Length: 304
Image (tube, rainbow, N blue to C red; front, side, top):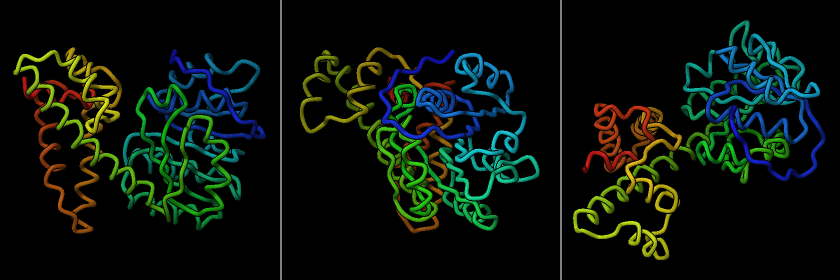
């Protein structure tokens, strides 16, 4: 069972929605949709996870599971998705058993996977050709944000489709913003990951330096967190890094996947990202140390 926080929802008309992918993010996101009063059909590659969701949230017929993405999408006004990578995304969207094959005319597919801008544009065109809409909508906020219904969502696509899904998506979001045309959501998430990579490495070096200098780093973090060094990473990961705790959601393997997308896109658009490229290699070191499932703040392990 995944614990999700109770959230006060703005009243919205109940809709029939689907959710594809019940991982550490998708499971609580779909749960918030049920709590907001929507009828939710879920699909997961592991059917046991989908059944667990129905057991937890399906009282009164509010949730059911489907055997394929196509079956889950049938009759849905909106199909949400959160899977692993470009290929996972194509596998649930395209083909005879894919969601597009089952969606009704005018329905909207909203993809919360962190994927490439290229696959977002590819699937946008595939949907458009058959009278459907596709929004790329990667999220930031991690597992805690999903559980608390407080994700920041960056969207790319058509304005009309965006406006249609926003009231429903606010069930698990604190901000749901259209950034531009198809692919703009994924590009915005890349900017986010560039920022995080630099921030976590800087915080790692600062904590390691302070500990080597004999400072009480919990006290130091309390002090500098009230000044210009303050950040979400410092507030939420600083003291857990001091305590050598690295079990807080977003894993190193996933960060390396994201940074790979960033560096590929940088080659295409001519951006120079020396710090990001270096931190990506530092995360590779953490993987070699056995930290593939440690959270991203584990960069400090290299310095100890």
